[in-house]
Length: 120
Image 1: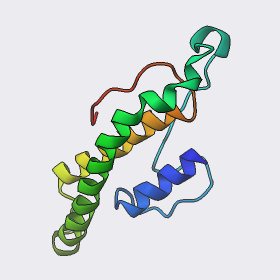
Image 2: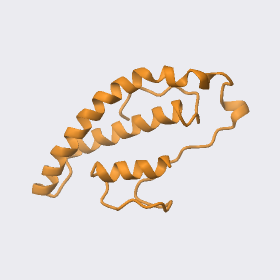
Image 3: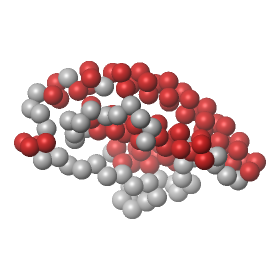
Image 4: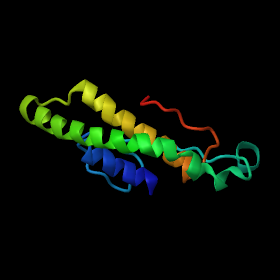
């Protein structure tokens, strides 16, 4: 479900022009490794991961607003020049990556590594 919703988000954000489907091989590739639970994950940390992710969601809220305006500006740039401006593209991809890292940490529970405050 996360892979498909990320593909839909990439399509809506004008990052790809390939219509998203449920097929695995597409232009948007997402790899979320399945953890070795006894070795890789702390037993009690899932109880507070959502709480620890609150600072990320506050920052991502404002970055999401900025990404929305970047997509609107990019739409006009694509319309008139036929190209997605590289800076806008990198910013929107970075916000998407950051959001996916935080989701994998707080809700998918696939890692105990705290996500970076970074667009890369």
